[in-house]
Amino acid sequence: MTNISLKLTGGVEMGEIIQVKDLVQGYGKNIVIHDINLSIMSGEILGLIGPSGAGKTTLINAIMGMLRPKKGSVTVLGTAMPNRKILARIGFMAQADALYETLTARENLTFFGQMQGMDKKELPAQIDYATKVVDLDEDLDKHVSDYSGGMKRRLSLAIALVANPDILILDEPTVGIDPELRKQIWQELHRLSHEGKTILLTTHVMDDAEESDSLLMIRNGVAIAQGRPAELIKEFEVNSVEEVFLKAGREQDAHTGNA
Ligand SMILES: Nc1ncnc2c1ncn2[C@@H]1O[C@H](COP(=O)(O)OP(=O)(O)OP(=O)(O)O)[C@@H](O)[C@H]1O
Image (tube, rainbow, N blue to C red):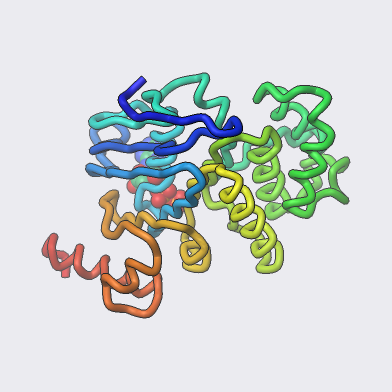
């Protein structure tokens, strides 16, 4: 355990839930994340935003403990990652769907729910809840092989939700999801955050960024802006989160001589 104090209130931990300190991460000799610092408090929704190849998935994989930090540290619920017990408390939606195609959606949800230690008696109600959030309740008994790409994304999100985890880590949860359902999913994410759940998601979409409580913008593996959307808009003297990103990118280029 680190020196971070976590208080228990009604079973939900309070305080700093995810902490990333001076993280350097990469593959072999290729460094793709440079000195990232990040703190996510309980009940906070943090949006990780950046262009393709910026290093979002790499950062998420480091937080999940799937990659060991090359330098710096990742702490989740006061425990250094990687850690199996902590992993069980995270609902994870990966960018590539990891589903059993020959099983039905219900069977997939049952399997992943049980893997996360869910009580068998609680599973039907949780499956019902999670599939309603993503609008798949009518298609629950279809084989995943008959699902469209968007339906598979939605099922992956339902799997992240099914075990009622304290922490949600979602890699591009809104890709392939229509605007109406996107709105419904955001309503649910806000409700979960009000319950004290901590949510980290990645996105390319500026609308998602505006829904987040706080943002970390990364470009070429470097944090170029960090803070609450409204504060960033003020700080960069622009009118939207998108303009913050563009201005911060230009400042990065000027700084590194790429301008
Ligand atoms: N398994 C891997 N082995 C080697 N290099 C990798 C691996 N995964 C990612 N990379 C490289 O690391 C960099 C960051 O990739 P990453 O997937 O983290 O970006 P991203 O921001 O999530 O992109 P996208 O939005 O397209 O998913 C890229 O240059 C990518 O080529």
